[in-house]
Image (cartoon, rainbow, N blue to C red; front, side, top):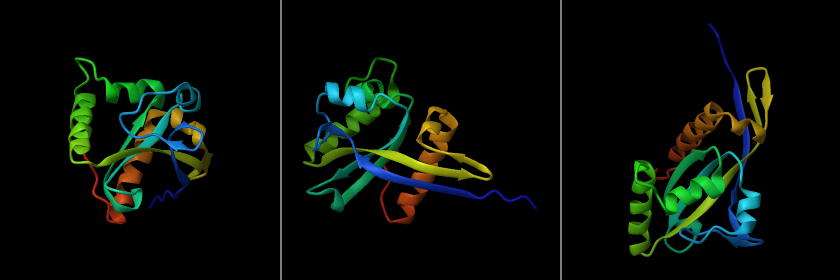
Length: 150
């Protein structure tokens, strides 16, 4: 019987518009964001009423380039971007319900995948990003979160 051991060390960090200011949908993309988040990423949208601690639900996704490409696509979906249109429509509905939509990024400290050791740079591989997304969805479900499947 084969066995593969996997260990992921990570931290969720708020995406910032500028130093010490959290990004909330649909704020404009700033030069600070373009320089800090122009990278492959696993991200989480926290949808909540008053504080992130009273989370209503979360949406977890991945992007080859979080900012500005992916973020811009959610805010201004093009004609053929059906999933971005769906996210935009849902998010605008949440805003009408007076909910907040905050963006976090998953910073990978270490991934032990069998005998391999990887870090945040491994997110440049789409298969690693998708693996992390699936893992984070399961982790959030195990902690009682509702997952938005947009």
